[in-house]
Image (cartoon, rainbow, N blue to C red; front, side, top):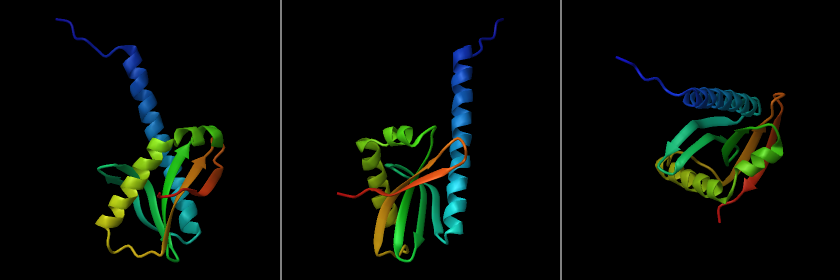
Length: 132
């Protein structure tokens, strides 16, 4: 009896997926640490909705921020990864989270993108896009 095993290409794909997952978690942890040092209160991390996931939701002084974290080789690559479809998904997810969390109090909200570069530097783009 022979036992079939996954093809080597599927092994590579799974290994690449695991690396990307762990790289993403590490990048999010760095951003959370930065936000906490800046006295933001983290309300949610990897908040899931039917429209998708918001990496980090934080508040400070009446501002509610939905943060998308991208671990990329350059800021340009991160910008390429956030297209109109991604923005719409994030906006829908944010609206759902606000409806589900009526205890969140805020005067303003914005969407930030934080790029985590390979050298560990963070590049924040505040108010990267807006609800229409």
